[in-house]
Amino acid sequence: MNKTTTDANELYIYEVNLSVKTDVFIKHKTWLIEHFHEMTKNNNFVKLNVFVDVNMNPLSDDHLRYQKITAQYFVKNRQDIETYLEQQSKKMRSQVFEKLGNSSTISRRVLRAIDIFQP
Image 1 (spheres, one colour):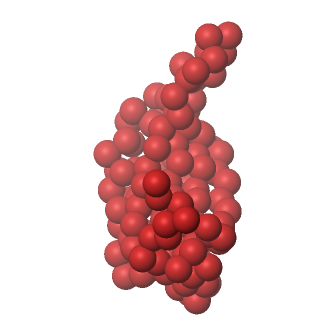
Image 2 (cartoon, helix red, strand yellow):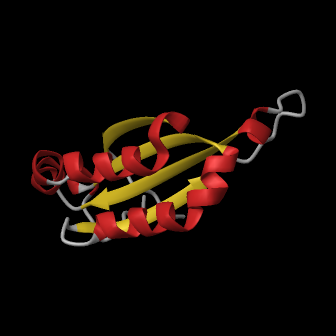
Image 3 (cartoon, rainbow, N blue to C red):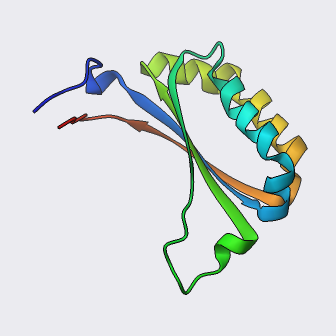
């Protein structure tokens, strides 16, 4: 099994999932992407992936009303994510609420890698 150069037990992902009303997303898309990038500054995040949900269900038109976005911030160790959550997250969350207000729902979670495989 091939491992990446980072020890899997010392890699965390701080994942933020947003569901934003489509009209609000279109209006604030540039700001939102910049916000994701701003979070990586001075927080020891080593990588950022941003995804949009692709509608693969022909019976659902939810994608017409909401844009679903996932941002994954890769963090080298537990201390760095704890420091971010204690010192920066409140400020960053308030910025999102100021822009998007009640037009979005947000969930967050922290994942710890237990294995990283690259074929």
